Length: 124
Image (cartoon, rainbow, N blue to C red):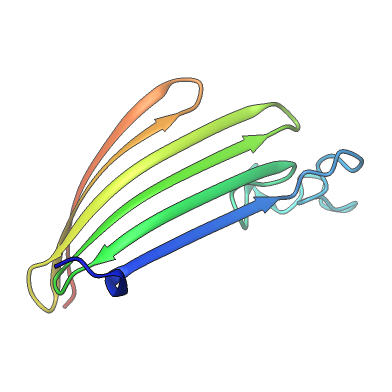
């Protein structure tokens, strides 16, 4: 029987958009590229001048977990960028050291992408 004791809900919201100081999240007067390595942001991937919403629901059984998640990222600077991601995952523990996971997702940005992932993990 389904029980609320097995349900986990998570929500995260971040907004670091400052219309007065554009691009200030990862900038420094000495390090002109900000907190980056070869142009890629180090730290949280939203970077500067962005708004991010993440929602997740997970249901835990004795040897399985089911997860649904949604994320929306909006950036305003240096260029406008919108991204959404929907994902569903089922994970089953086959033994104390082995688990298998199946995920399907849909991501939308300039193009729409359907993502499919099957994973097998064994801890030695």
